[in-house]
Amino acid sequence: MAKGNLPKLHSDFSVDCVIFGFDDEELKVLLVERNEPPFKAWKAIPGNLVYDQEDIDAAAERVLYELTGLHNIFLEQFYSFGSIDRHPQGRVITVAYYSIIKRNDNGLHPVSGYAKKAYWWPADNIPKLAFDHNEIVDKALQTLRHKISYEPIGFELLPEKFTLTQLQHIYEAILQKRIDKRNFRRKMLSYGLLTELNQKQKGVSHRAASFFKFNKSRYRSLKKKGFIFGLR
Amino acid sequence: MAKGNLPKLHSDFSVDCVIFGFDDEELKVLLVERNEPPFKAWKAIPGNLVYDQEDIDAAAERVLYELTGLHNIFLEQFYSFGSIDRHPQGRVITVAYYSIIKRNDNGLHPVSGYAKKAYWWPADNIPKLAFDHNEIVDKALQTLRHKISYEPIGFELLPEKFTLTQLQHIYEAILQKRIDKRNFRRKMLSYGLLTELNQKQKGVSHRAASFFKFNKSRYRSLKKKGFIFGLR
Image 1 (cartoon, helix red, strand yellow):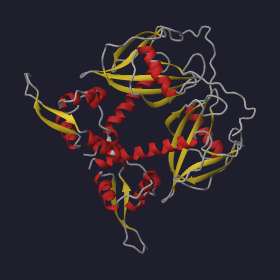
Image 2 (cartoon, rainbow over the protein chains, first blue to last red; image 1 turned 30 degrees about the vertical axis):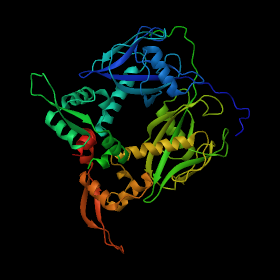
Image 3 (cartoon, rainbow over the protein chains, first blue to last red; image 1 turned 135 degrees about the vertical axis):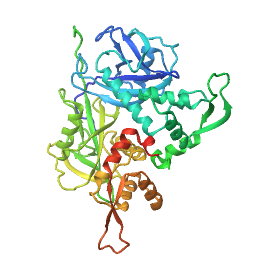
Image 4 (tube, each protein chain N blue to C red; image 1 turned 120 degrees about the vertical axis):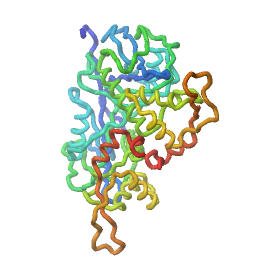
C-alpha cells in the first residue's frame, strides 16, 4: 500500500521482566536497584525503554541481560500496562514478560550502568517498587498461579529425579499456602505425569521417600489434547 | 518522587479488538472496512490509536464502539504486538483484546467515519487484512482454543436451556474440527458442570434430546480451586 504523505508517528514503550526464582524452598523475585532517574536508587523489576528498531521480545531479553546479567531465559509475554500516569515522564506503555527459573545467586551482575545491583527478593515480602512495578509483580504472580491451576509446571525447577515433597514445595511456594500432602499426592499421581523410580532417598532420618521422574511424552500428549479433556 | 528536568516522552500505541461471534453453528470474526489511510478500503479488525489521556482498556471499548457500534462487550487483553515494521507510519505497538459473544447481525453500524462498514466474517476463511491483523486474529484464535482446553466456556453463548449438541457445536466451531460425540458427552458430563433438566426437545424429527443447564456454583468453585485440581 502507498505510504503517501502520512505523518511520522513517535513511540515510547518499555519492557519489564518479572523473573521468579525457586530454590527448593522459597519463591523469590529478581529486583534491581535503579541507578538512573526517574526513581533513581529505588528497587524495581528489570525494565527499560525499547529502541526504535528493536523487536519487543528482543528488547526484553536485552534489558534483562543489561540490568542483571541473566540471559538465555525463556520469557513469556503476559500483560501490557498502560495507565495514563504510570510513568512520570509521559505516557509509556510497558509490555511485561515473566519466567520462573531455578534460582542461582551467582551470575547476577548488572552489565549496564542503568542498574546498580541485582538481587533476589522473597516473593511474599516485596518492598515498594518504582513505577507501577508492584502491580506488575502481582499480575505476574496471579498469572503463574492461574497457570499451575490448569497445567502442571515446575519440572524444569527440579533435578531429574525428585521426591513428591520437592514437587509439593514448588506448588506451596507459588500458591503461598500449605497444601494437604495426601490430596496433593493423590492428584499429582492421578495425571499419569510422574513415573515412580525404583529408588529411594538414602541417608535421611525420616522414612525414605521414593524418587520420581517426569513423563514428558504423556505431558506433551496432554498438552496437545488440552489438559481438561486429556485428564480423564 | 521528583520529576526534575526529565525530557517529555512521546507515545503512539493502538488497541485492536478481535471479536468472535457465534450463532449456534458458525464462528465468525468482526471486521470493518477502513475509511482512512493507511490501508484505506482494506478489511481490518476494529482498531485505532489510543488518546494521550486515555486508559488502554477504555480505548479498546471506545474504538470498538466507534468502528462497529458494539458496546458493553467484555474485552480481555490477550497479547501485544510490536514488530518493527507493523505500521507504515512508524513504530506503533498495539495492545490486542478479544471476546466471544452471541452473534447478532443487527446493531453493527460504524459511529465514526473511520470505518465504512462493519460485518461478521467466517473465522475459517479470513481475507488478507490491513497491518498485521491476520497475525492478531490467529493469535486470538489460538488463545481461545487454549482457553477451552483448560476451562469450559461457551455457556453465555447458549440459551438458558440447551442440548449437548448445541454445546458441542461451540467447541467444534472454535476448534474448527469435528469432535467425537460420545467422548464429548462423557467428558462434559463428568465435570459436574451441567445439570440435566427433566425436559426434552419437542417437535423434532430425530430422537428428542434432553435439555441441560449450567451449574454456575460448581463452575465458580472449580475456577477458584483451579480446574486441574478441581476436576478430580
